[in-house]
Length: 251
Image 1 (tube, rainbow, N blue to C red):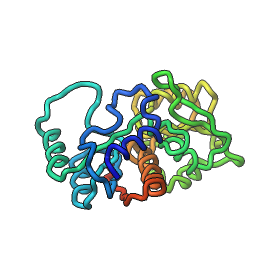
Image 2 (image 1 turned 180 degrees about the vertical axis):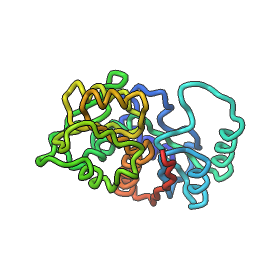
Image 3 (image 1 turned 120 degrees about the vertical axis):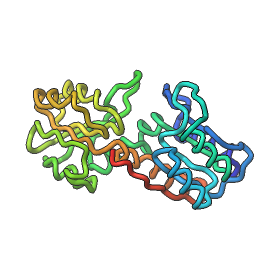
Image 4 (image 1 turned 90 degrees about the horizontal axis):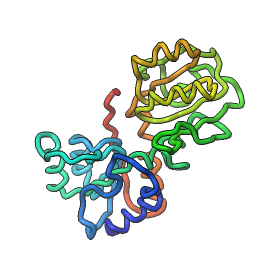
């Protein structure tokens, strides 16, 4: 499959043109006419993931966090070394940031909500004029540890558990990644639990005084869901070989 054909597929599938984002979403490095047989998927376009994708014989690396973020910068130091690896393989790079967070079926938040077993899902969490997360309910009340268990996590796996709300929760909202500031929207909507990736000192007392539970499950951990979902969809729709490169940051 030609790279330009695969890029068109991703641009349509993930509705890239519909989202205002500081990331340069789409093809960031690559020859349009290159032949693609294997696609590697990862959260970050880091030297480690690029190297592992190249070693695995991938022709394209699909990531959530790419190399271009709203302003020009010199290709020096670690940035130069990342590009050098891409060019020497050669390995194309395709990045999708916010469109992958908010996609209604393949997105990080949709898959997080699905894994949690939330029902009656509705958009939640306005960012740049768009709601990028989801909120929903459970048919039966759950403890915070029950919720973590549905994600395959324990309290020790989280960056922080803010347990200032009800002992049993019936509803929750999820926004992957760095969405600490959106906690206020969960409070305003009288939700029992808010789940995001990052933690923050500044919201400790806000959680406590608002009597809400919040789980900071890790930025990386919360954003593996979308890339894995797109990998499975790529195999199904395009018949290409895919692999997921797991490089957790612990953050």
